Amino acid sequence: MNYVYIQSESGSWGSLYTVGFYDPDDQWQPESDWNDSEEAAARVHYLNGGRDVDGLIAAINELGQQIEVIERYSTSHRHYGGITVE
Image 1 (cartoon, rainbow, N blue to C red):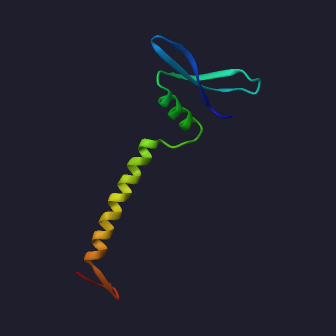
Image 2 (image 1 turned 60 degrees about the horizontal axis):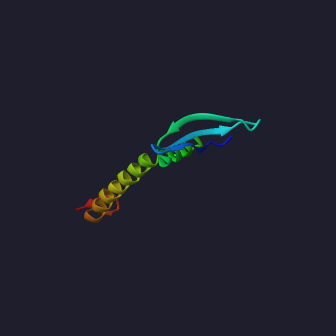
Image 3 (image 1 turned 90 degrees about the horizontal axis):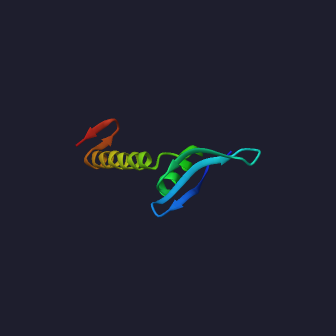
């Protein structure tokens, strides 16, 4: 089963996007409603096993900062046979 979103309503006020799936009998099974297509797409991504993109970006940025610290440390310290020389 894969979740999808459809534009379920449209009017002068805007659009409504419904997240859901089609069951084996091809019947629509709604899960949630969204006013923004990007938010509906993000929900579909999550429900289909995707990762939280904002959380992933934050984790990548944190790793980048940790790499910078390691690189600064490794260039300021030299290791010779178990002895560290600064």
